Figure: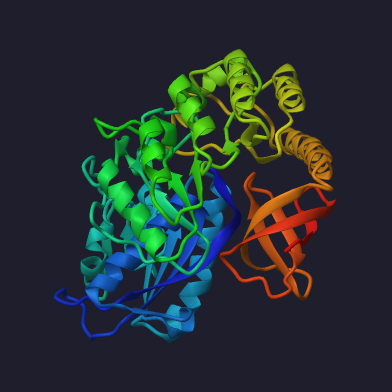
Length: 458
């Protein structure tokens, strides 16, 4: 699963516990979301569960009766950030003993009882398959610590409606769990085995998003293109989603390189609503390392897939995930990764140094042989190379007219708006009265490695 650019996304939900052992109507909850898009989607799901139970939205920690951190476990650094944040919140709890402090999501499942045993100020630990019980668990946590991290192979949260913040894109989870069991990855152990949401419920959610005014949807899954509900495969589902009125753009993440069929590639080429952007994780450019990672493809097969995609989808933008310093990665393996990046020329990449995750096959069976200092040097090298490539690709956009979906005000530059192109490039341009969640044609006048700059043409 592709990680978000921002480690922490504050969000809010509502809760009261109507009909459940929660004292006091109108209790307020504040949720902070860490990690990937799946976690954002889960936060929206929890918001829906809590709102249905009657809980109210808090404006922030100071205004909350319950604070929940919805967490990621894919990297050690993400867990460290959450522990640090919990330590900060413990000071708030000392001044307000009735405050319920909880952890949900992947880290909750990964560390489970360690959180309750080592962080005594944590009241609630809830895993990814236990969100239906959140109001009940909050009630229990008001008296004694509450824990529910059981995995449920049948839980797909059918007929539960998420509560989304206003915006341009609606995250829609179409499958949960993963069956790949890559040796470095904790996901199958914290989210369980793969199961697909029935196509009918996916379409219901897409139609609901359209009725709420969203112009873009992103279909989510750990290996999203392996979706199959028994009657509908991923290619068929994309065609169905493309038929929903009101939705202008369709994205999906993250696909697995081994699960691209000719049928799927044909569908991507045929449907204009499907964006010409694919996040295609490669992880390594070394066949030996890929085998140790249990990635189920070779660099040759991956390069062939890239060629097929680019042939079928002119103008395709590609991003990827890169891990450096995987156990046993020699200099020649690392150079193979650098060479593959130069050959493919990704538009962007998420790059990480290997982080051992307790419970994975790599943690148990493959010694972490690459020194941390060497990992850091390799990470600096791949970042520098990708930054250069991204800059070269983006500068070629100067002069082009791109359709941009306006997301809001740019973080920097007064009077500037920001949005995304079809190819998922960040575009900044003068606001000039342009409304959020509308499409505008922008002429690109300048570019950096991360951003395109332009002017709107009305």
